[in-house]
Image 1: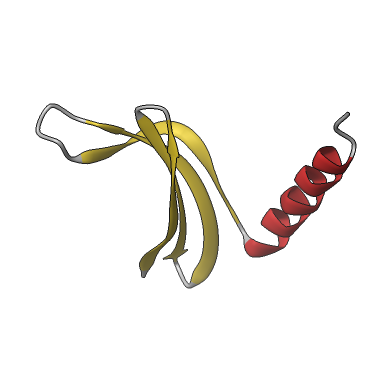
Image 2 (image 1 turned 90 degrees about the horizontal axis):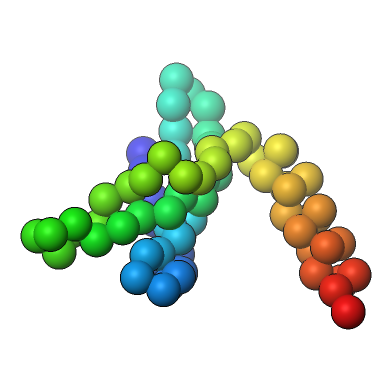
Length: 70
């Protein structure tokens, strides 16, 4: 199972947030994609794929960082 949750534009690239499954385990991923010469979106090696429990911790840390912005 692989499901795109959201594509977020980032200049000429995009960040794709998706759900996936591997060996019966579910994962949440965020990866940067680029457009190739044919106009197709291709994944880069830049990104992360984590279990939902770890991704929740990352989300909470990002929210904390955003709250501390001046």
